[in-house]
Structure formats: structure tokens, C-alpha cells
Image 1 (cartoon, rainbow, N blue to C red):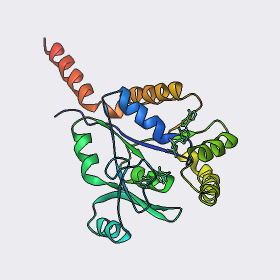
Image 2: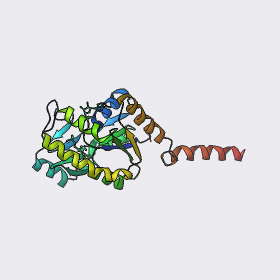
Image 3: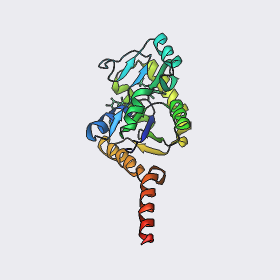
Image 4: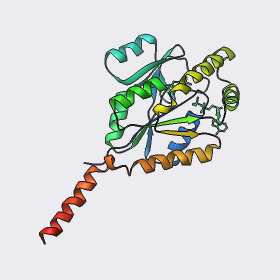
Length: 209
Ligand code: ADP
Ligand code: 5GP
């Protein structure tokens, strides 16, 4: 049996740069597979169905919930967001590291269900920078930006639940930092049980002479 990939959950305030970071990570390294979520929010300009998200009606989304087709789902600023199960399971079993870019309620659900999940929180260097990035992205009205900033203050209370906290200041550096974290994670004892058993068995053979 091949080695299973790492399930990586990435959260962070809206506008922190998660999407930008993850796209860059996937572009640079082959071991990652980026899960595409389903959502009931409308596509932003430049977003395509099946690329950034699977855009669904509320009815369609609720059917996915009923059919247990989602690993987790949550409501965020008035819309449903959820992670389709099939892709994640398939990629993990192929040994790829699967990235879920999801908000904090979803992150907690995934960790509970799959305790080996690596949880990473992405922060901007400051609240000022966050606001500037959200505004600069130009994809939301000032009203929605205000809601997202209010939500950020709530989410900031949950940062301690994560395994790693990274600051997305210089994109280049942050991408490399995230990659090093995942690479380091591979050496954790609990992820190497088979290898440890193998060397143990080989050493026992030596003892037999
Ligand atoms: P999120 O997915 O966390 O909501 P985005 O990836 O959409 O955030 O990034 C929000 C805005 O900030 C985008 O306009 C993006 O180009 C910009 N951005 C992301 N990372 C950086 C960075 N390290 N430095 C400067 N701007 C950034
Ligand atoms: P946006 O509307 O900016 O694309 O995403 C809003 C928030 O929803 C972000 O924090 C994003 O990480 C989160 N999100 C995206 N997909 C999912 C998902 O499948 N499940 C959960 N719980 N959150 C998600």
C-alpha cells in the first residue's frame, strides 16, 4: 500500500491571501491537490464553475448535505460552503497532500473527524493590511467588506485551535514557509508507523544471526 497524503486545512481571515498562496503552492509543487468547494455564493468576476468553486443553488447544496456528499459544511456571511468528499478521499489515497481552504467552523469539524489533519492559520501582517487587501481585491461591496472584517474579529478568537500560524507578508516567503511545514509534517512519528515496523523487523532478523 502506498503512503497516504497529508490532509492540510488552511484558514485565515477573508483577504489574508489564502487563495493566492494556495494557487502558488499548487503551481510550484506537484504533491498538492487543491480541493474545490461547493458554495451557494455567487461567482465573482473571473471565477469559473468547477475551478474556484462548484456554484450551487441552496436546493442543490442541501441535497448534497442530505446525500452525505460533503466532508463538512458551514455557513459563512449568509452562504453555505462545503467540501465534497469524493475528490479528497481519492487524492489522499493516491498519496497526494490535499489542501482544504476553509473557514474555522469547517476546520474544527474536519479535525474532529480526521484527527491527523494539519491545521494552518494564515494571517496578514496587520488589520490595516487586511482591510487594504480586501478593498484592493475589489470583489465585494463596502457592506460585505465590513461584514467580513467583523467576522475576522470573531475568527481571531479561534486561532489557538490551529497547529501553525503563518504571516502572509511577502508572498514568496510565505509559500515556501507553508511548503516547509508540510514537508516537516511527513517526519512525524505517527505518520511513519509502517517504516518503523519495517526497520524493527529487519533488526530482529539480524539478532537471529
Ligand atoms: P483570501 O483567499 O484569503 O480571501 P486572496 O488570496 O483573495 O485572499 O487575497 C486578497 C487580496 O490580497 C488579493 O487582491 C491578492 O492579490 C492580495 N494578496 C494576497 N497575498 C498578498 C501578499 N503577500 N502581498 C500583497 N498582496 C497580497
Ligand atoms: P470566499 O467567499 O471569500 O471565497 O470564502 C469565504 C470563506 O469561506 C473563506 O474563509 C473560505 O476559506 C471559506 N470556505 C471556502 N470553501 C469552504 C468549504 O468548503 N467549507 C468551509 N467550511 N468553508 C469554506
